[in-house]
Image (cartoon, rainbow, N blue to C red; front, side):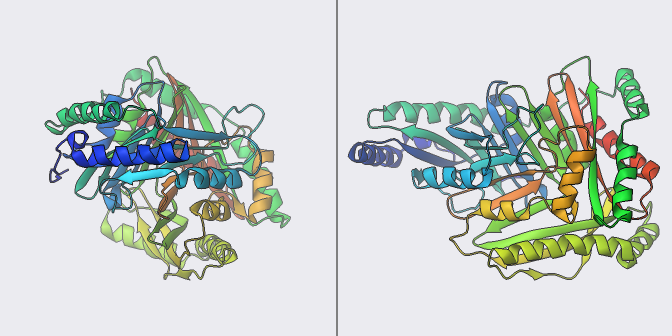
Length: 476
């Protein structure tokens, strides 16, 4: 990656920062309450994933988001303020949290780029009410203490902290200065991620894991009976694979593998500071919101890539002309359009096209809408999740059947992960192609859409193929 170095003089030594902090402290004294100060400074080019690997501990909350197509990434660690939601009305509680702290944030520095500056980092579970066996909150939202942002050709460091009437602002400046000096050392040399060769142990692990039969085929057969009885027309059933290694898995190495293997996908990591790290590479954007313009992807209907250009074009034309695949795709695009209309928006859909990834191609429709400032991005998340691409049609009935047929908790699988700020910008992805890692144990997830004519054995084979891809990413 070639990035032009920015002016990296320590903002902590700048008189403007001292004046800013002093003014903020006067506001604290006048109101007799704490405020959040967010300080952003341009820095020399660094690799955000490398910084996250080098600067975090197992006891810190971590977050990584990368949109490779836009050459943008956010790595964040530590928590300035956070909220875990475990009760009902999770979307309303999330909005309340944002509204409570959004007006308490005082920012300085260049935050003109949408990905830069103070962010509310958010991840959800698939279902609002988790299973009794799950201890995961249904929403976790936090403002990080430290954040590195890469946006196109520029890099930025953001520090968020509480400022009280009595806090020593000199200490804040020194904290930032020391951190910038440490980070700057990583801008002088390229850090390489090392991957050992796949061991014979891993090969044996893959064979044993994929030969093991689970209730997935039975679930597909039950779902096909429901489809035949016209209870639903599509359901997305997921499957999990638990693996144990001799050494702890390294989520950062796995992310680096995924970003190289899947350059067309979002790359993500959510770590709770208690040893649980949810990672993955997903092609599916729930929506992005920039300067009140929303873009959402209807991504459904798929085919393999060809071994050569002629075969690839033949597969693409078959996909485009397939009535079954078009029907599945239209269910997703229609759902997104109708849900956005319920928010009072006027969505416009592009013509149906192909999204070609390195190992698969999808039918793809881009949906755009202008969003008024009074709509909180969390309202959009609440309306769109879950789409038929990860649940089924009708969505409510499909979700009921998923809970009935799946023998495990989906947790974060196929749920929204993303960020939003106080200016109306946001971006959320859908957490498919993913795994939950805890030390030397990992649970891998994969899903398949079941419609009339689906073959249980073929669907199981597709699931196993998807799980193989994540197994390779977990080499340690």
